[in-house]
Image 1: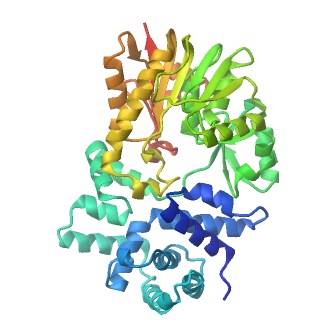
Image 2: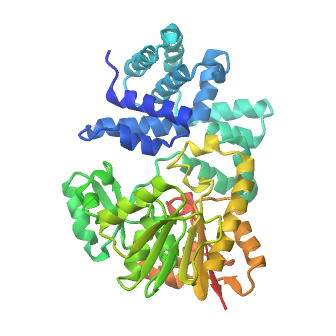
Image 3: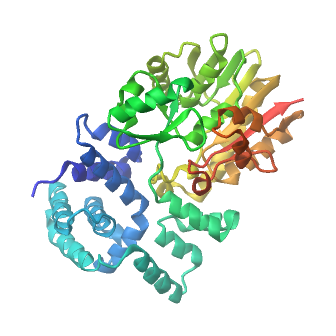
Length: 461
């Protein structure tokens, strides 16, 4: 049996994710060739991201069949087993024989033929129990772990495939109910949203995308957003023509919080890949001048490509390390620091993050982010506005960064800016849903149906 292109792509991407610390979404975009059938592209994506999302539970189950630890296996053998078991457990439409045989063939293709018999035997044993439904299996596992005295955070971590330490943090921060909702949301496919760059053309662009075979619905929150399924919108004519950007609605909202209309000088200090930059540039208009910085040359090239594709001309991209004092002599009207972070608000979209992140990474990120925010405050005009944002759910990267920065910045304060966001929402009153009494902007994946974002709008005077 020849290996299907979907399984081959998924296996190769998973191997590179593990070996190179690469991101699955980027690799899938590169590996899925133009002209690939939508069904094959969809299966490759589901297999790759599904295995990464369910990795811990898959390994827990495999070890029951293997009678040894998964980390004792060669990587290629383990990946083939995970792919096979994922199909047996989660994809009813895939015949069992195809899931088993192609997993065996993947092992042979990876020159691990000596393990082919073991892979075949393990997956056949798993197939015999595949009739146990997902909820029933979860109940059995949870009861088994509970009777063994396993701590609740470890039980949840196994069942929902998250690191135990992260589950424990979230239980302390969000409580049991919200944590359970978050864990479940992280294991569902993330919605794919696009920013429509000419808001008044939204309906025409949506119809054009539908005619090209995409399923399109209005954005959940923003008037200038669309939700798209049934393919990769970056391959659409609307994207090539610079009419849309692939960008989560929460990310778009952060750009709107900057309130760039009428601003003459704007700094986007951590600008790649450039989605927020373009929203800011459009809002500022031809009289506004925007500097888009990033520390990495290859990411600057991504920004430049985005600017060219969308015909955005009022942006100057520069190599810039926001961790160092910013080299500008005059204050900016607006400064955006969308700081590099742990990304815990994007685990549905980037599931590999959960297996790489360590507790100590949060304190290291805090130190870097605090330096960036202090530099941003120093670069802003005293009558201006600074927006600090992350796609993290962790207080070390959010509230604690802002609090520490304000200690050394007299005159600056947090200001709630529902008024800046409201005009862009389908219902202006919905702006209240994103702000708490502390004035911070937050999105929570299971509550808002977006990535998890945090933003603080800081003003002086």
